[in-house]
Length: 77
Image (cartoon, rainbow, N blue to C red; front, side, top):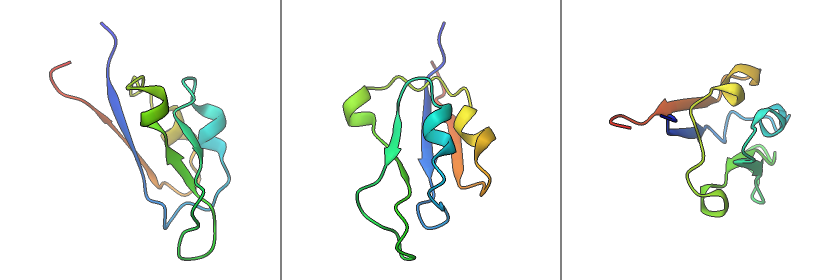
């Protein structure tokens, strides 16, 4: 059975290096179109385009140098 997950990005901490975008095998992340308080365009999750494909692999979390990504595994799946 495939795990389901949820990714949360703290957009105020993200510096926009986009390593997480390259690390996601399901293309669930992209550059935000709105800047954060520092004027940086952070990464954002795009579930609306990609459905709920996140498998909570943690690739995005592992490559983030700013530790601004949290990956949750959904219970009961």
